[in-house]
Amino acid sequence: MAAVGVNEIDRSVAMVTKAVSLADWLLIAPVALPILGGAALLMLNRRIAWHAPVTIAILVLMSLADLVLLYRVWTEGPLHMAMGSWLPPFGIVFAADTLGVLFATITAFTGLVCAVFATAEADATEYRYGYFTFYLLMLAGVTGAFLTGDIFNLYVWFEVLLISSFGLLALGSNPIQLDGTFKYAILNLIATTLFLVSVGILYGIAGTLNMADLALKARSGEMSGPLMTFGILMTVAFLMKAAAFPLNAWLPASYHVPRSSSSALFAALLTKVGIYALLRTLILLFPQLGEAFAPVLLVVANATMIIGALGLLASTDIRRMVGWAVISGIGVILVGPGLGESAALGGAIAYAMHSMIVMAGLYCLAGAMSWMAGGQSLQRMGGLALRSPALLLCGLGLMLATAGLPPFSGLWPKAILVEAALSDAAYTTVVIVLLNGLLTTIAFGRMFAFGFWKPAPAAPDEGAELALLSKKRLVPIAAVVVVSLAAGLYPEPWLAASHQAAAGLLNGATYIETVLPGG
Image (cartoon, rainbow, N blue to C red; front, side, top):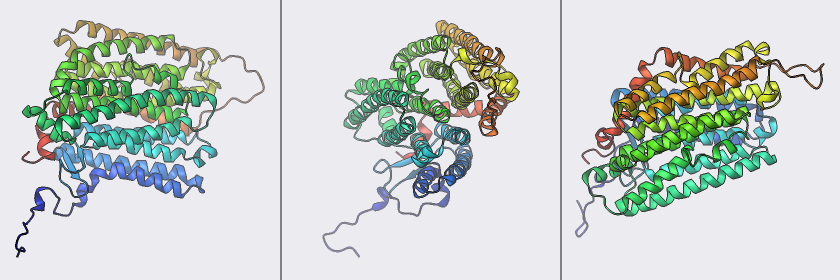
């Protein structure tokens, strides 16, 4: 019986009153595992021989957790979990829809591939200074960004991945690395500051930062105020993170300085977090802003494809070349939100997944070629075909995949985007997408000819023994090629998943109903 003068409080309105089921904890497992793994590596600082095995074991568990989560989302629809017992929109939530889980799953796979490659590159000093700790924390930040249901926590995960990536970039502390880290840090801190300012404006407009609540208010017409200012700031911040033209200068100036495995991880994931945040904000949360910015995004997409292809042609350093290939791919992805309709968005998401895997493989390929040749300049390479026919085949596969040629994974999403652009009468974009593929083919053909077919330059020491490629370097690259080939030969599952992710973005009702039942 309640005391006189004291009102009973119905906590079930605002708080979780039942125990969270074991199956729901699966939603945070892909984020918790790398954080726990990073903490374990700190405690194992004197046992550096354990760092690589522990990291690989954590990444295998992450991959399994993501696959199970993907199966649940595929069969049950979006999932969410309230943290700290407070129900949304009051508390922090993790939310998983098809888009977020697809990107999280590929994050774990590329992380695993790059970690195996890293075991051939990183030395004992880097292990001791926390190479794999930074590595796992960066993966936690990326995965957290893909699975959060709160836009302020999206900012927090951005910070986690950004600080970890600073560590990976600067590890080694040579002047070239510090120069690249400085450029990377300044531009990314500007983008993060713009993001934080726009989050403040958004909270002032809406009074909430829960994504489902924001989407609900935007659809009901409750939101007013300087929404366009928020949209401009947010779009600029995310385009800078994604390295889209004209905000892309930091990427080729910084991605060539760390270990190839770190560059591979950056190229696969960091720019895609910017793309993911852009899609989530402009398509799911504020479709009216997405429609307003679509013509701008299409112009940015066209310019990014052109500048990326020209950068590829102009480069003679193979790791800088791959940096321009990343930028070129970002341009192709932006065609989807630039056109805005379902098929184009599906093609863009499929291309983003293809790009995450293939760019990781390309940086590992560039790292392997540089290691065998003793430098990154195409002018000083040659004869690699005779020294490693297996790397030759892997290189050919990755170059065809990047150019969007059959039978690899780049073909289908590009075809979908071209078809969507034709349907939308965006003929300039059609021409640029096709021209981009042609220039990419020419640029990588030159890289292939110089690196593999040209006779090897005379070595300073004729008697020196040439370095052979180890399995630790070759197997991760081959794994990427096999996945890309499988996706090219049997594209139905991942294209269906991409289109489901696009449909979920365009029609946010299911996502909103999941996070805010009856909202």
